[in-house]
Length: 120
Image (cartoon, rainbow, N blue to C red; front, side, top):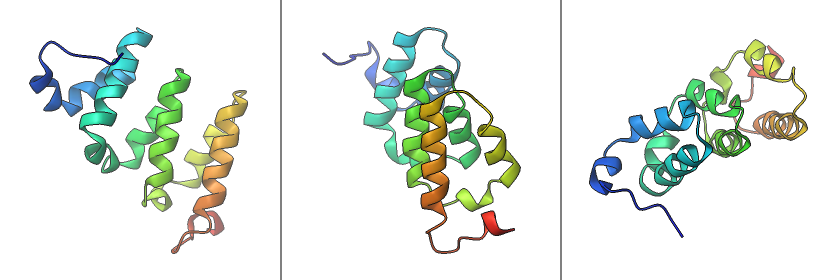
């Protein structure tokens, strides 16, 4: 089964509203629905989001939202703009999966061309 919104055309043109639902909805089902619609209809838009928004995703308490944020960050080319302090603040937690993904992300980013941020 897959979600079938009543006003599909409206949601196809409402990426901002879907992102707000994803980040703020208190209902897991609503977040899953918003995530599915974003992936299917707005993936290109998501790829152009600023890093700050993706960081909000990885900080989310819902593991699916956080995992999606990491997936998007792994594809993002502008990680060097994130201050080191912002990365270090995210290392302070007890979610082992998030810590492993963050470590992997930082390690892989260090091999990209233009790598400078960790050596500052």
